[in-house]
Image 1 (cartoon, helix red, strand yellow):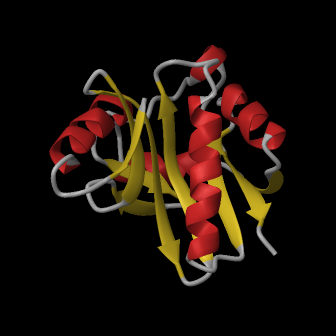
Image 2 (tube, rainbow, N blue to C red):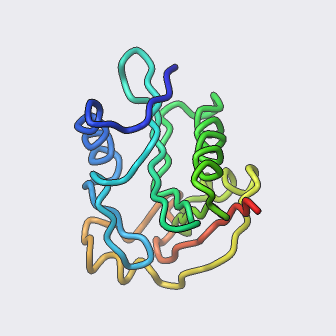
Length: 158
């Protein structure tokens, strides 16, 4: 496995990976459109294929995980990506890392909490706003749970 930061050479492949996993290259978080073709990230390659991707933004002293996808669960790849983003955030003198997921994503909630992230905010009915900006968002999510809310997790670096 090879961990590579997004760069001009792999950006096209990264954008294709994002579009195939998120329906488009735009993501809606807290009612804001995020152009995924412009975010930073770390891709994991195996045999020249992307098998995982963590995207993020840094603004001031805040690092925000925008997306985290791993095609091969249970191998520690996503955990290693979290370790790498912790290092990136510290190098950029960030005071915390945040990640937002939806109420249906039980795996993400478990994943972040097991890695030291704390659940700090609920954005009640946030997906009502998000669907106005991105109509492709389904009404029913993972595990047949109605997709309604965003949940914010935080990892304190200070």
